[in-house]
Amino acid sequence: MKEYKISYVPPSGKPLGTNVTFKIATKVVIPLLNLVAKKQWRGGEKIPKTGRAIVASNHLSYLDVLFLTHFLFRNGRAPRYIGKEAVFKVPIIGAIVLAAGQIPVAREGKDAAKALEHAIKVLQAGHLLGVYPEGTLTRDPDGWPMVAKTGLARLAIITQTPVIPVAQWGSQIVMPTYEKKIKFFPRTKINILVGAPLDLSPWYGKESDADALIEVTAIIMRAITDLLEQLRAEKRPAEIFDPHNSDLPRTGNFKKKR
Image (tube, rainbow, N blue to C red; front, side, top):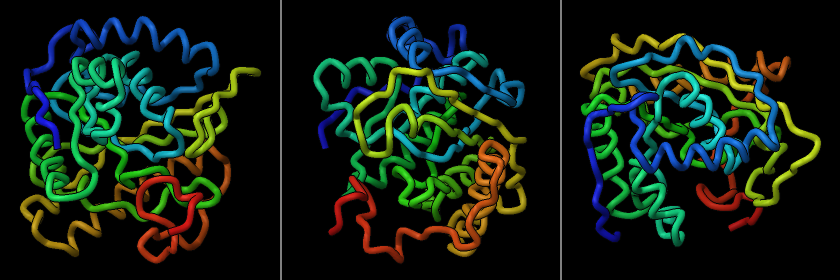
């Protein structure tokens, strides 16, 4: 993996965590998002104004991160993400994202383990970290959250950081899953709903307990799914989609079989 100059400077500015590049990017991106989306956002008061925190959301579209960032920015925080290295290799865009404080990691291979190390440092500095626990866009055919990886659970337990569940719905209409075409008209309602912070203190000190990590991961994903049920006004399927038991690729375009 290429060496990147990564900053772990404590958050400052307003919204908290903003730097010059982040601020300039919002001046360009937010008006574009407003062109294609109508905001139906609830629960912003649950986002802490200061201190480290983790926001965990379901993942439906490439646009999720932009809408979630816009939501968090409007509620006083400029978040940080641990993003796949491929994004940072895109000319111009990669340099902007890096300068805005985001952190690249290799999704697979020996460098993948560094994601946890980077995330710990970000939280120790006092930032708000945005996480998609599934690690990729959902493979569930109806867009429900699937069985997630345990990395978020380990991170939350090690750093003893509250996890705030968030559900998003609508981004997959603006830009369908694994597609890059944007629907401009009519404007699409983007729903975001925030839940109460999860108390994971009973599991503190159990970051090496595989069963505990699975249990905490299920609790986080259940909270996200409960919120999504409210947004969709329908019930989740009885069986949660498990990518490990599927013939679909674990990462990348799931519309293409192995």
